[in-house]
Image (tube, rainbow, N blue to C red; front, side, top):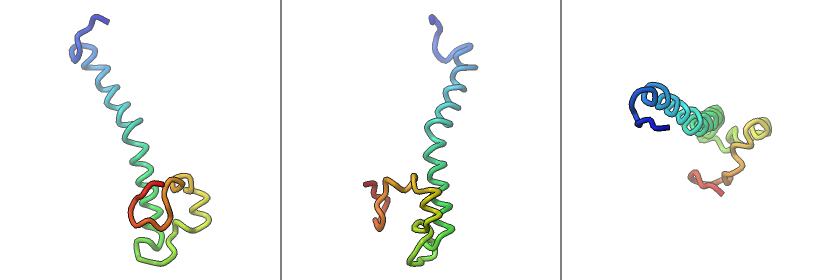
Length: 81
């Protein structure tokens, strides 16, 4: 491992692998979670101000409930329990 950083093979191979790995493993999961929750929110009545948004629907809770378990119902902001 007597290789200088950011030159030769390190720059052409390992830096791109590191960048792609960072994007896939660090940025993609939170972004995917946000997009799924945003889609469910937009489909329901929350976007239109209805009193019973789709988040409280039994089917939605069965499908996406694991994404909502850390949030308190009725919180005015994204307050994590």
